[in-house]
Image 1: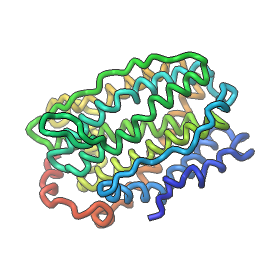
Image 2: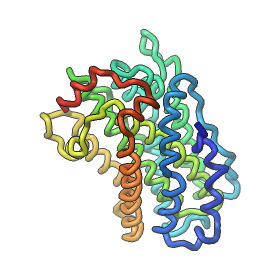
Image 3: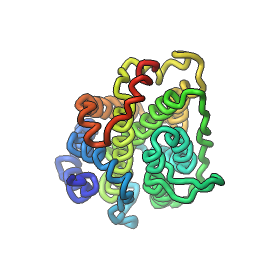
Length: 325
């Protein structure tokens, strides 16, 4: 394995500092970033890396950030006040990472303990966290870094106002619970990927380089969660995915089924969507569509044989679960 994404900052960002990129319209910038940061080779590499991280978890080190060089003039095509509002919303969303990781660990632990450890670490018999999960180790640096960026751009210190993550709410169907929770987790990582990529297209210089570090982390985690879900639930249809996301009543009343719409509404609120310009709204929606198309093309090639080779043999008992979803 080449670990393309770990070498990524040395391989790709210069492409987005060229005159051709700097003078390109926003849609073209977004296309170039998607082609570079979400290539099939990189997505495959990040998914194959999951089994190695089960055995030898190693956090990805960030490249050095030239903080003193970051300034508001590096924001392109967004009102600087809106840019700061987006950062504030991102900080509030990123801050309660411990709650996210522990909820996910609890859904995973009865079925896939290795993935539970990757996400949320290990707890002892008293419920105390004795080992951090790799996901938390990498994500927990986002909020402090974003707060530093906010201060660098505004001269002000921001006090985060995080929300309370949803707690673990098991039912008598752990496979269904994990399916619903996992789908929500993939959706949130996908949303973060799209947002940071969109911000990169509206930035230059050291600000652009900083945002790339956030984007690389989110792509890495989104890819691993997406691919693991394809492996754990191989028979799930697109219709099942869509109905689980958008229809709270499908399959019976379940507290988890309304999570996606709730998360989407909260995301729009914390990002101050109502204050965005029409061009900004359209380009973000375009980003969501293009990234989803790229992921779907990649996902269609993730056949069970390939996934079993990369992640190990699929538990046979899971096959019966697919028919009941």
